[in-house]
Image (cartoon, rainbow over all chains, first blue to last red; front, side):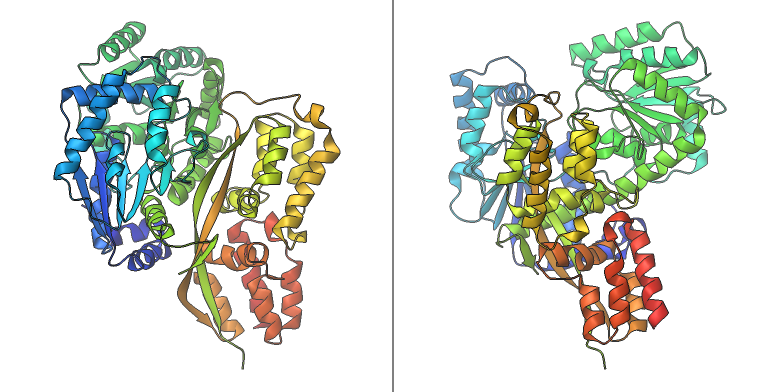
Length: 404
Length: 213
């Protein structure tokens, strides 16, 4: 695991000094994070990287996980889909079971902390036990158009917290509690983002059969219709008529996800006739491979039809790659069009900009450089930790301007 | 003997107000109702987040009207507000409202709505001011500190101190004037920090200070 000092060469001394200063103001405060899984998923990933850094900053941060059976997680999965706008209703019985599981967890948990930081809907009802301390609910998921019934149910709990945290402005809605914007982040020292030497990149490209002498266009994402892999292939085909290039579609996916398997088969079918399209189904723990593929790319795409935040964009920008991405979800926060990347709205638009960037490498290089600086300033884990520390401090202070 | 200038830094926590606008009329209603910290946030956010990209950052209102509503004329009117002219947030709010009111009546303001997903979301920010170890008792030390301070520190003393904290001038000019560097204070006052990148601003101020040190 990296040391906090390892970030100094990346973000500068003053950023790390600010973290130390803020952490010092939280000394003596116990902070408890609660979520529903210790491994797997974005929340567990960020907590497992963030907690050791908080400890190095001498923040008394802890992490606990609620327990639930298969039925509980079936209900929470339905809630997740409902918050994404899905229409499958959740029955009164299912809501009751959800609450029962939360209450069962309350029996065995020590929630005595100055700040209780609850992540996502699964443990949201633990707030029933709030009797002191400050409670914050952190929503990591897309909340743009939640199903009304599920939203009303959750709202009753959210408003019992002292604050709610969302990842994008569009997820905010009228609530009786403070709402804070904290965007997710990438860790520049993780396997997915750390510097790789040319030999490692070349080795991985050779393994996949990529020709480094010709341009490589890449999209890293799950095989999911919402990531529009077939649209990516169509855009590539429009480009290929005029400019020689290769296309990489790489990502993982749950093997028990029938839709994912179906999308993968369709993508393989659409790519079958062209030896320059590489469809790579990567197993879990392929972070170094993803890192190398992004670094070997001439252009990185993220042509999603919907997106929560789309951190693959920040990952590619951090590698100073020119990125062409759809203007959906959190992507416009990461890309200022024509300054730190390209935002598109269609297959034709994506193809047009791929051609432009392949033929104007200087402009493409500048986009990548600007993108890297934008990520350095806004989407690295150090900014994420800073925002959490400010959030914690804000729970004990008043006013628009606070002198520390 | 000059007084000691203590460099400070500042960090912002962005808050969401749960208020959004789909057309100019809703934007106008929001603009009139949100707290001053929201007006400050939306007229200065670009400066902070994109300071290394372009020297003339538009305010969020102008950017949204231009991009989500494609009303370039109104966007330009809002973008060209001379922010440096305003000493109080409320004056800036009044000017923004005045431009919208001059542009059209309620019917014209609600005539065009943005696409779903492109709404304007009102936000505000809470500022935390932190001490830094940097101190200057003369111009040479001041210039040396300027070379080391973060953009957050520069930002705090130039923008935040003046408009958000309601001081009459930026902190640097106040210190120059109080310590007898009248000409330097005058030159500093002539700078329009809104039309320059943060690194460019740092360079300019260092040049000015060096010339008087």
